[in-house]
Amino acid sequence: MADLFLVVDTGGSQTKIIYQTADDDSPQFLLMPPEVEAISQKQFDRYQERIGWLGAPSSQQQAWFTLNEQLWVVGAFAAEFDPEDRLLEKKYENALYKVLAAVGVIAQKLSLSRRKLSIHLAIVLPWQEFSDRNAFEQQLRSLFAGFAFRGQKLKCTLKTFLCRPEGGGLAATRMRQKGLAWFQARRLVVLLFGHRNVSALFFENGQFKRGDSPLLGFSQMVDLIVDEASVLDRQALLLAMVKAMRKEKGEHQSRNAVFDSYSLNAGNLIDYPGWRRCDAIQALVSVRDEALQTAELDAIETAIETAIDEYWERIASWLNRAVPDDIDEVVVSGGAALMLEPKLVRYFSDSSRHGRSFQGDLVWDAELKDTMEKVFRWQYSGGDYIARFADAYGLFDQMLDSVGAKA
Image (cartoon, one colour):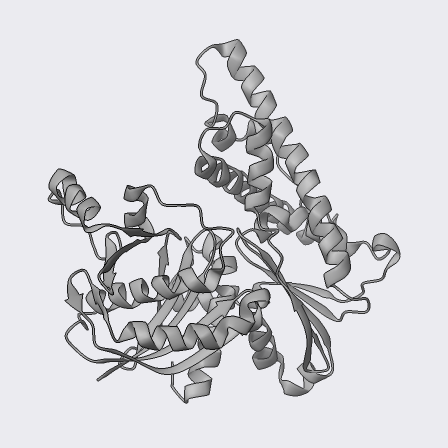
């Protein structure tokens, strides 16, 4: 029997997966698109007859399984079948199918399909769905007994199960880094900004006090932009904004490095780029006429600037409720944190924010950057991954500790 240690973070933009077998020296990671769709056998057969015979896609690219005579497609493969938008559905139900797909992909990737798999699973859920964790575990144990991945029945047993609310992995990381005494002497808030929802966890003197995870994710900002500008491809818009912001952040860090060396202006704050000057934003323009191109670019830039301000008003209002006064540390992470960084830095830098005080430290990604870059060899390409995987990585370490395993 092979032991598989697995963390699945079923985000609204991508599913983050960290896994390791008992024989491995270090964990590995996978990213899969979030789509999940139930299709008929006829739909599947038509696809195979039309183009299914072309090429040799990996199990990650064509993840599908049968369960109780129902065929499910997950991730990139689901996009071939016009999947429904499930952002407003509960995460934990769709997470069941994403876990099954993750197990199947890993089993085939590591040639474990013919062995019995003893699975140690950890998963994160939004705070509002955390009470569903027992139902999730019971249903998953049942599903493991009767599913076949890409036509091959897998023999899986859920040996241990660990569930934490989103942000729980980051809190566990800070306690492990700083020590129990440090954690028990602090008022700590973890903030996670995702595509579907945002999450906040508040700890006081080591005790969890309260959590919140409203549907205020980055997808709302994208909706605001699309409503105002004629951008046809939402995913292209999202990627263009991230690319532009990533470039601006890199240039800001370079400027600060120079300023620091001369002890000048070391505290200058990051800001948003001039959107119309960004190549990635310019590439969104779809008309050919030069005058119309200028007008469309103007509209896109105005829509982005307006949407950021309107979206931030919603986030700031939520932060005023979710973050108490006199906090010692705020840990910020999540894939959408990059787009909110200028606003967040100013929010927590302003000691008089809305008549309240904040004198604590603002910590990004639980200071896991160096560790994760080393483990996953992300030195040259992990900039986007750190914030997405930090919570899952913290939970992975916690899971290994809980089962007495050695990474």
